[in-house]
Length: 408
Image 1: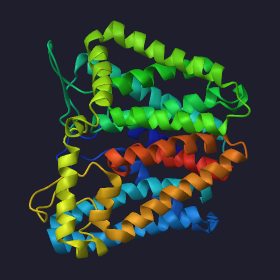
Image 2: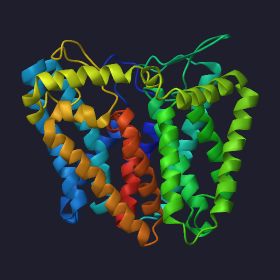
Image 3: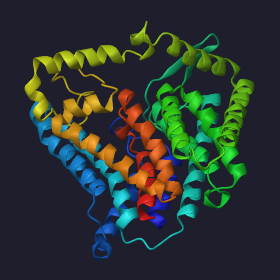
Image 4: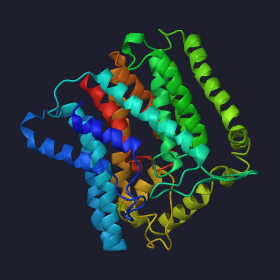
């Protein structure tokens, strides 16, 4: 793994944003290393070997549609909204660039397992800080989403670690919990880290996921594990794998019950009540998302022509074009409103291409292919309750692993 990628991942996962009022959370140091990586890639263009395929075309089409929508943001919401839209597209572009750089760029051949081990250590340290941060309730980073837990003993900010919001931390932990599950289903030599580190990391990621209070990420892990069971149904003793994963979960639950007994009890109650009341009190279970979706549905019914081109990527939470800013909390719905039918089609094409490419890689015996196939299956489901492609500090890690699968 080249130096700029190592520095980018280390800073993105282990440093908070700078305390400067700019955007939602302020600028971040990892952007400097991303810029260095871009300059290095441009200077080495003659060494790139991009292969034409459906996945690469889907990435290009999706990014192109988002970039084109910036003009619509300016038309409908003004220059300030257009500038914010451009920033969001550029941040997503970092992840796409890292995918192409790792899969086809000028970087020399490197040890994929060693590179993954390094990222795993960064991730585990980030999850550890999230747990410590929740316990001591350190001052929040420069910018953060106001997400809290109300208990008899007080009001606590949900675990978010170094990230802008708790949902990002939960999704990030889900990614590495899926990696641990895949690693235990394969021979030891294919695992990036030892079994002991997998177990220790599993307890950390599980604890941080619970303290983030993210329910969508739990569903993500459940879907990923179901896919893992399916692809290994003929060759792996699933009883042993289930026992090991259950041990990881129990270890994390025991740790939480000892350190955060009230929080652990509240989280299990939240999951139980969500399951029991999903159909009878859907609006409460989905934290107000139904009302937002109904508002968007009414607007699209009154303005169907807007679905042809959209109103500009990531303008919904900031524009008054619909009457008031609104958070869709649904990747598919927000892409449809903001970038039109072409944007939704490009997103579906991208998801399908990722699943197809990783399924082929997994069939060839790739650890990274199986990891990404399982995780992205859960990710496509979790997109129904969150704008996951805006998690720009963790998305590069996902696409880095995707590129490793493609390289193999």
